[in-house]
View (cartoon, rainbow, N blue to C red):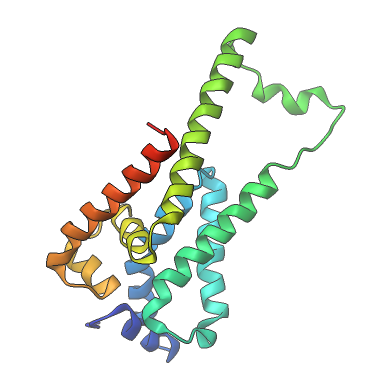
Length: 191
């Protein structure tokens, strides 16, 4: 399966090419996972969001008007599904059954639990500030950084093909984007 761009791969998948669909999933899964991990979901919730994201793409195959932007569509869908999962996880269920909650007990003293909670809250706030600053970056920077954060990491050639940019421009563009992100964080006093 030799396709020059993600858009061509997507169009082949829309046309019913199973090998193209498989190649598309292999090419863009790191991007989807990087967005999911950025939201700090549990492993189970992350897997659910991953599957839902690809299911949504399958549902909307013929509705996507710009095949070359399917990676952006997937990143946005993964973000929206991650936010839905976070909202669902934050809902509280009340119960009189003490045994239901025994698994959550740990060996921490109340003081240690408060300190750990404050540290977690501070870390969560740093992450929120980071993603707010990230959202202020231009779309090209956001797309590039999301792809570069993928796991396993993509080669520059794969990134160039996925984003339809020259291989030689990836490094300088990445530096500019990260510098801008650092500046935005510094403006907010985030270290």
